[in-house]
Image 1 (cartoon, rainbow, N blue to C red):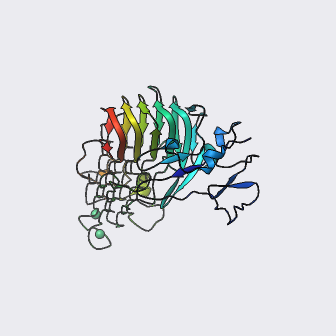
Image 2 (image 1 turned 45 degrees about the vertical axis):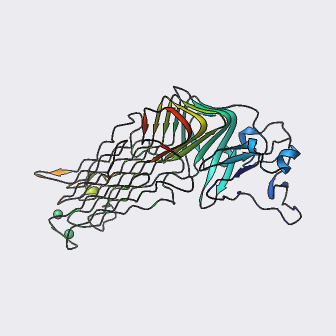
Image 3 (image 1 turned 90 degrees about the vertical axis):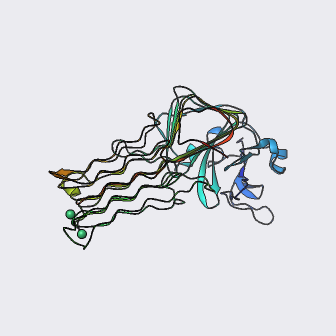
Length: 422
Ligand SMILES: [Ca+2]
Ligand SMILES: [Ca+2]
């Protein structure tokens, strides 16, 4: 027998739809599926799919739970995400379940995949308790949601990481580069020095890319404007990740000679516990640094804008944070001179309150291309712009991400940006 899970999202401010096919008028469903609460789900005789996943057990469907309306005791979460379970979990979950990276593209890596209306579908993992005791890195388009009927714990040596990273080991955190973001702009192309890309905006505005060709040494006429940073979105109405930076402009039409790519926005992770969240280790959702095209292919390029930090949600009556909870913005890439600049640093994580190192503009003595902006961390009150120059402009900084708490927070001396109680 396969345990059947039914999960609904019933938030205050939006009404997501369940991702499965609706039943026919008389409860008809295709194939081996059966009708549960108006939707076609896997029957008790099994099959594979989103619903049983790693939580499959010998439990049976409880008519009361399935047929009844949403029992308040089986719903979890008071904020942006609310999860109702028809059958409560009966065992704890320890993460990571397998070594390596959890890719939310694969539904089998989630206990449930649930749609959000006007937002990305969610990869949900459910247990009586959920404990992160190793390094769990999550990528893929779906935000990661952990739900425990009792406690979610990240132990002191544990790390839950949905950060995005550029350069060596590049990855995009789960739910990063969300389509719900306000876009940042690319830097303008100019053969006399291109503009830098704007930084991604999310919790705060992304920085403006630096302008290039201030001396108007080549076509088109005038300087090359840097891209605008993305606008902030401080109260998102769906759960989604951080926002990408804009690309730097290029100096000519040679396809090899293109500006630095924008950094990826940080991912999103959301924890819900019926009693308590305890974070002694790390929860990271920072954005990636803006890129460059290195060597002569990056001649007079604009540096890429940094990606914004992503989103972290903590929802429990008690939220105890002794570790680091971080969603910082990536730095901008450096502009090009005779060669490309250096990439912007990835948004800081372990060094939670430091700004990522700016990308450095290439130099042709005595002139240098524009440096990128340094990244953002807690206390960044203004957007940080890339540097303008006669050569290629630097990329703007990615803005801060968002950390929301729903419950009573204790500790939390190493959180960046500052958490917002909702
Ligand atoms: Ca110039
Ligand atoms: Ca020009």
